[in-house]
Image (tube, rainbow, N blue to C red; front, top):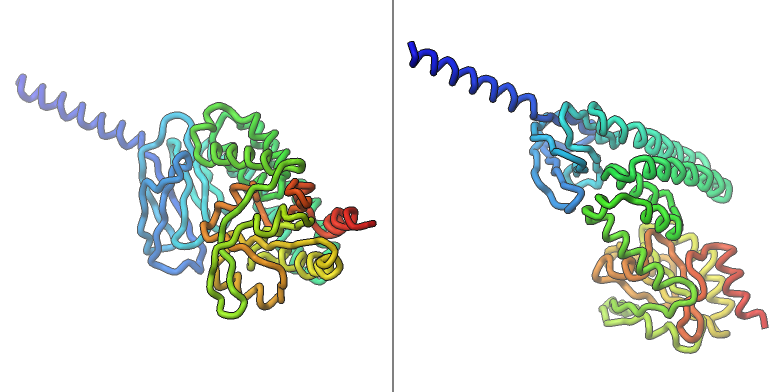
Length: 362
């Protein structure tokens, strides 16, 4: 009888432990876009370290994945196959529904908070995309419309960050705040208000480093030299090149950070930089193109297509140039004086023309 009683107690304990274990598990339920080629895979990343912690092979457009919920504040994200599609989620207890088409995760308290903000941001971004299709033949009108919408995206991102500044999910809003073309000064102000726990996240500490580099490359500072490669116009062979080969050599210089895939970069080259080059190249103006976030062959092809006459320096180390100059987006055009002092940055269009002409009026 005692043996039976002991066995009954043991089975009861095992059963309760199993139930408790099942209750503490969380579930990801995901849906992929219909045009996703299968089979594919999804990787799960810890956003604190930016390292993959698991991967899921997927043979259907819907998938389920169980995991142990993380105690305390945490932020993960999923990357889909070879695409750039990502979904951020808080790995908390419960069933979390993921939608890669809408970039949202919802179904649990913290994820619902994040989803409300993300839905508004993404729907506004979609509106901008549709408006561009309608207005692409009238870019002046579109740019005015875009500025209004971008300002709205910055406002809702700033509000969400400040409301959740002690939680890592605030970093999603900070990321989108940057994408909405927030100024470096505004980004710095927001970062300074972030909670201490955000310092455990690699993206946050790296952004702080970028902001330090921004302070070092503001107007009034000496330009920072860059070392990359340039390509010979005849045979396309590469050779070492430095920014100091052209900048700080007794002439005014424009440093144009750009990429072959960037439409605004190409418009700036054709509509602003080329006319300035023709007008002032024999009067003491140098232009240097700095190719970033690009592929060598694409860069060469675009230089040829646009018939760019000024020298180019290619960032063969992928991100080193943009980090040193705190470039968050392109085009980024910087005016440097004859002695190497940075005179202005973030110049575009008429503002760029006025900045250059002010030094050649006499």
